[in-house]
Image 1 (cartoon, helix red, strand yellow):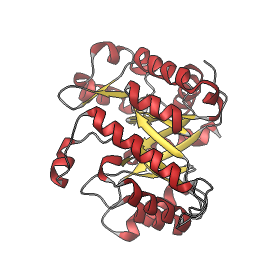
Image 2 (cartoon, rainbow, N blue to C red):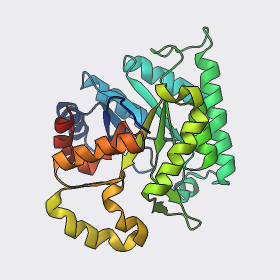
Image 3 (tube, rainbow, N blue to C red):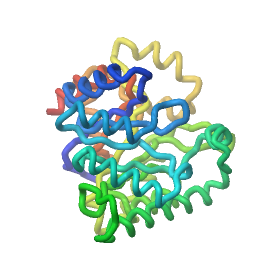
Image 4 (tube, rainbow, N blue to C red):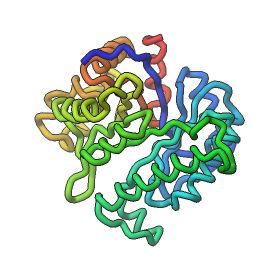
Length: 293
């Protein structure tokens, strides 16, 4: 698989308590060359849509996305109003990231039934269909700034989630991990990731050239910190995955130039052209962006 699609770089951020701190982080992300500012959707953090409107008011170029909304927390019709209004207020810079939700404790705190994985995916599909129907209605108000509504990013790992993403999304986002029966995420190895990408490519069919493939990078580790990082986290990773750590698209180790070359290799091998890092790696990853541009 060879992909020559342009790289896009996003950073997924957690909104801090202070307004000025958030504004400063957004401006810094744009200054460093990121293409997308993402906002996580978890209890105990600020609500995503106001955060994105504030980000838009203090930046000029970056796209803004929810990375990702827990669809199970939202009534689809009410969500459509929030999405359309936010897209209007950010002048069409919104990208809507959706997921099925996975943190059971948050469901319990909110008093929302966790349900089976299948029921949560069913709700997500209902949400996507509702958004599409409403945004395609010329009489719908408020009107989103982008015709048909913001482009969708759908994140997942299992067959049903990835099939849904392949059918509806402009971006298919891979977690690079799978949920175990006990709940926590298990880091996937290169072969497993290749299999998941092949599944999506097959499901996309003729849509494949127009859809971006996203990967969430769990850690960006400078060469000087390599030994310490592996010592601290190696025991939590399956031995066969740890043996292939230099091939993982979810963990990037090395110099900026070395990581840039790894991303080029990953783009050819897996098709990942849209790279999202965590806020903790905002500054560490920035020299890689400069290398690739």
